Image (tube, rainbow, N blue to C red):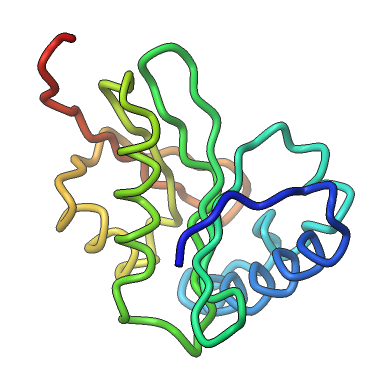
Length: 155
């Protein structure tokens, strides 16, 4: 079940932080960089992020989250994380497609991930994202940027 997360609910914020840490430690190991922002997120940072959060609940627990900001016709994905116990179940795809559906005015989706996070890079490419470039954002951390252009009829 996908639902919008109320960030003012302390229990929900704690769930998000716990999920992010479990998910991002896997990414940190893949990219050999342990200072990624998701590992240092806390409840206050989540609540003050001004991002919209949606969760995917499975078997009574938070299995995945997506957070984003939208700017006009651009949807900027800030976090897309799945708990390692729920990898490869289609949760990330479902969350991304739901965000795309909810934001029906969007014409472009942008997202970034560590260049060495090959599972994430392949995931985005499989969903129609194209790599638009790379940038070293910190010593030893290169980020790959992706975008997906949406072909939507003008309404």
